Image (cartoon, rainbow, N blue to C red; front, side, top):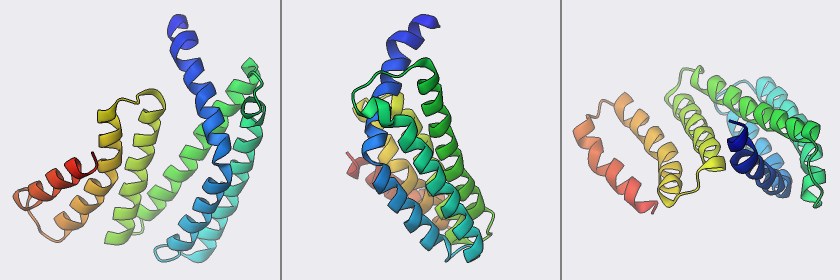
Length: 172
């Protein structure tokens, strides 16, 4: 396991830290957009609290990745700080997915499913960057949301199969 850690995981984490640092502002904006759209599904005070927590976590992530983004090396403590910040951010988005899902509306369930599938895809992409993984990562949230809405509408898998297939191949 130690060989895997030093040869595969550590370089992947270090590269991820650099990439994540570069998009911190964009991610903060996405927090705002998600909270704003969330008010269509959830009470606005809940969305405002989620936004405040998300922005605090983004600040932590920016601080945790700053040294590596400037070309410095991570210390063991710095790497664990980045891992904790990255995990906390993803769990925070997963919380929003759960809040959407439990709202009990088709839009909330679809939005929650999209977020959960996108998070799963992003996690996989940190470690596996083969073209087929990109294809699946891009298609999964759209196929999942469309399927959920269609199934709630009473559609059968036979009606959905052509749509799933075309969605899957069109992301290539």
